[in-house]
Structures are given as C-alpha cells and as structure tokens.
Image 1 (cartoon, rainbow, N blue to C red):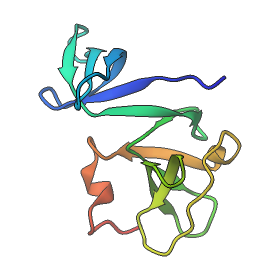
Image 2 (image 1 turned 90 degrees about the vertical axis):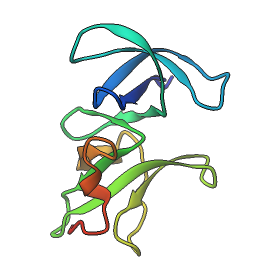
Image 3 (image 1 turned 135 degrees about the vertical axis):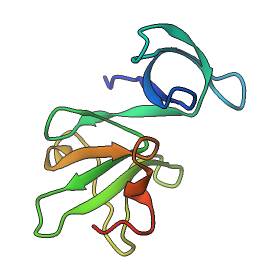
Length: 131
C-alpha cells in the first residue's frame, strides 16, 4: 500500500513543514505542522503538497511541487511534479516545451534527483532558467 503524507509551505517563516494532521473541510486546507526552525507545532492555512510515493536516486522523498532533474542524458532535463486531473495522477511536467513527460514510479525515479521545489527555489521554474 502507498504511504500517504503531506508537507506544507509556511509563508511566514519561509520553511517547509511536515504535516501531522490535515483538515480538508474548507477550500483552503488547514494543517497541524511541526515547524523545523523552532521545533514547535501549530496550525497553518496552507497549500498542501502530497508525497507521490517514490524517492529519487538519493532516497529523498518526492512531493508535489518538487523540481526533479534527469541526469541520464547528455543534457540535464528538469521537471516540476504536479497533479494532473487528466492523467488522474502526478506527472513530471517538463520545464522546456516539447519534452516528453516521464512515467512516475519507484522504478523510474531512481534516475532523477530532487533539486528543489517551487516555494524555496522559484528561480528553478522561472522563464529565465537554462536547463
């Protein structure tokens, strides 16, 4: 069975927080999180990012909003992990138009590494990014 867990971006302290409990009854989810910088816990209203059920080649868990890099080819290719209603699952959206969307599963993700996420590293997904 796939492990289901979430993390949330704390806009105030600018930190990623593991979610302990989430409430989905409102439009914006409320999350009870552990704040890494202070070691305290609290409730924040946040956009949640779900664990996709796979790890990268270094054993780092991959979440929605992560930027991953494929190093298997001559040219490094970057992707953003997003939920796709059309695909009914998570997809790796290429940052360069025209690239192929790779399959996301435990077997294929060993060829990729997490290089950041859309909150802590917005420059990775900007239009000026050279990949």
